[in-house]
Amino acid sequence: MLKKIITNNYEETIKIGYEIGLKLKGGDTIILDGDLGAGKTTFTKGIGKALGIERVINSPTFTIVKAYSGTEYKLYHMDLYRLDGVGEDFDLEEYFTNDSICIVEWPYQAFDVIPNKHMKITIKRIDDNMREIIIDSNNYYDELVGDLNV
Ligand SMILES: Nc1ncnc2c1ncn2[C@@H]1O[C@H](COP(=O)(O)OP(=O)(O)OP(=O)(O)O)[C@@H](O)[C@H]1O
Ligand SMILES: [Mg+2]
Image (cartoon, rainbow, N blue to C red):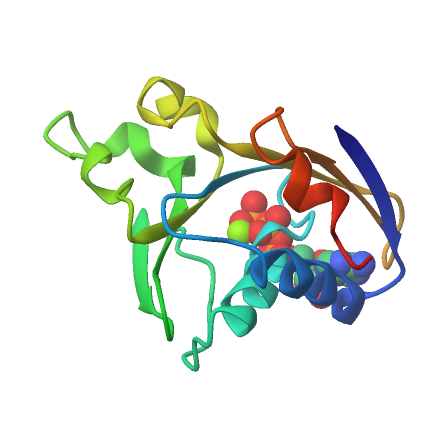
């Protein structure tokens, strides 16, 4: 199932992340596609809010993975943009567990370790303040996307 939503500002993108975050469960994975500055990290802030994470979620660009504790689940926020420099001993696999939720920016560098059961969200910059958010439930998340309050 594909769902397309237009947001007109930063707060609206956070709200979409929030609504999706409310429906996520342990073991769920979201890959975030979109250019630099599209709004992937902004969207993740909304997810964090829904999971009860109080720390500010910022871009993990220089750390590859940041871990956060929510009320029920752990959130791993990954940015694989610079994965190339990290070396082969970096075990991404171990983050995709049944009690964690993984959000992956720039997923294509390590696509082979990302669970097939993922939802893909693409964020396209339309102009300075407008974004198109395309949610592809990839069959596994049809129910979640169908129930979304957006
Ligand atoms: N409708 C909107 N939704 C999201 N962000 C918006 C919107 N309008 C403007 N912005 C701005 O776009 C920027 C999005 O930055 P963000 O860090 O979320 O992008 P990103 O996709 O994670 O980039 P990167 O690939 O560098 O990590 C912010 O500066 C935000 O204020
Ligand atoms: Mg980012």
